[in-house]
Length: 437
Image 1: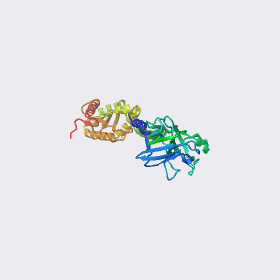
Image 2: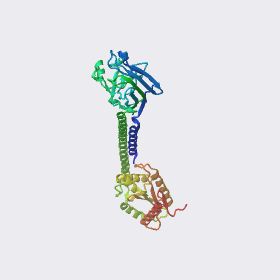
Image 3: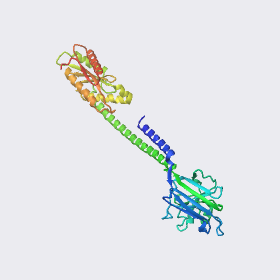
Image 4: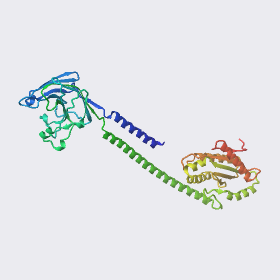
């Protein structure tokens, strides 16, 4: 698995982790409305000239309302309840509950003088300067419901989306249609009241807790953020790929220019040896056929012990790996480059022959065994330290022999055996036989 695959996998794991985390906890944001933090006030119909009464008592976090509903000649719809002011200093500034989706009400509501189950109204009053006035509490929007299931044994769980804006409030305040839906972005009051059409009698409302449940982050926002991360990653990856592509093009152009220069140098060297009839078509070095006549002439003239003939047998180490990894075209280019590197160390009287594949033989005229060994060691070091076009280190193994009472072929055979001794000895070394220290 390469780096980009690991990065994609890590991003995938991160995405799954974040989605799982949001699924488990993202919708569990909690906000409790406590009488220790906000003003809980009793309400009744006396402001409308009714006769109902209400008294509020606090016991720790719990609130108890006791009220008596009475009909009045001046007001026909008696009620009582509790109003929670969320900002007593500025009525136009409330709580933003738009990130909450549910309210949990732990309330007990009973009649003290009857077994009938009473109905309960619940409101979230929202202030919006587009239709609300600070000096007219009635203009604060009524988002609410009338609960008539009459089962208060369990906490009431109410999705805020189920709250509706009361029709009579819309009509009385002539609210335009664009503001007719529920709003919870500036809730100034939370109200409880006896249900509409409630009978006369004694009522008791206990509020144990009010808790809003919401989002730490909305699903839509989370998905958008994750999408932005993936898009950002894709853009970054694409930019890197474009950059890498441009670098490869530049490297290819550099390599092409380098090869042109290399070919130019090889052509110049080939021109210097134009008088010789046969050369290796790939490297420009002499081939075995063309060197045969020269060897026979040299061998026949080899009569003076002061004019020695030595040979260096070279083989590029692990050249098959180069062909397998970079292809035969690059391998051919390296053979040309190798020829140029070796010839740069040779004298005009020396003969470089491509013996076959990646094997080369250097015939050194008027060269002792020691001199040939020193030349071979220079070649080995230069080959190892040279900056090759494929960007990796290249080494060679060398065998050195001097002609004795034998044929040139016997001398080459001995150098070949020394070459393979160098191979067996670990490669990248020079082996010579008969050289005194």
